[in-house]
Amino acid sequence: MIKRKKQTRSIRYLWGIGGGTLLILMIIIGLMPMTGRADTPSPLPPRPGAELPPRPATPPPAIPKTADREKSGPPAGAYIELMGLPAGSQYWTVVQWQDRQGNWHNVDGWQGWPDSGGKKWWVAAKDFGTGPFRWVVYQGQNNGPEVGHSDNFLLPPFALQTVQVTVKTTP
Image (cartoon, rainbow, N blue to C red; front, side, top):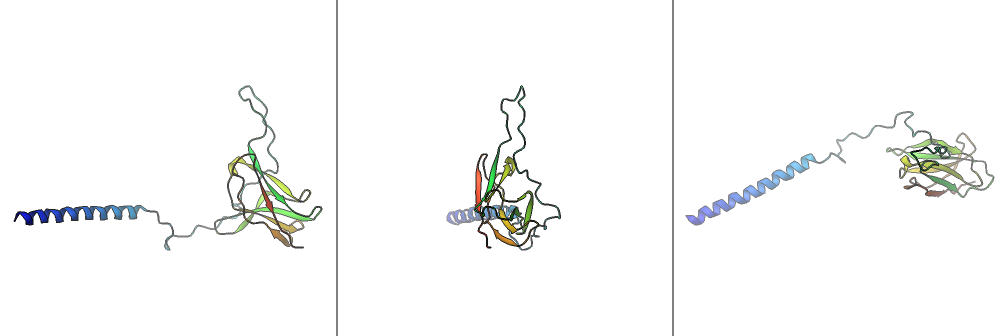
C-alpha cells in the first residue's frame, strides 16, 4: 500500500512537470512573431515619389568655428567611387537603390557625366552601411540604352572610407 502511494505521487509529479513544460512551450510559440508564414500579408509596394532624398554631390560647406566648438570642417562623411570607364566617353552614370520588392530606383543627386573615367559622390553619415545600391551606365543622358551596371554594393560603413565600384561596359 505504501509503495502504491509513492508511485501515485511520482506519476503526479512527472505529469505536473510535463504539463508545466508543455504549457510554457505553448506560451513561447504563441508569442513568437508571425514571420515567414503564408497568411502574413506581403509588404506594400513603394509609394510613387518614395525614393531616397536627394544626395549632395560634395560635402556640405564647412561649419564656421564658434566659441563653444573647437573643430571646423565638413561633417563626417565618406565616398562612393565609380571606376574603369573609358576616358572621354559620353556615358551617363546613375546610382540606384533597391527596394524590398527588388525594384531599382534612381537616387536623385547621384547622376552625372564621368570625370576622367570615373565618378565620385559624397555619402552622409546617416546613410553609412545602407543598401543595396548599384551603379548603372547609360549611352547618353536621359537614360539612353544601358551599357552596363555594377554588382550590388553597400555604402561605406565608416567616415573617411571610399567604396570603389567598377562597371564593365558593352560597346
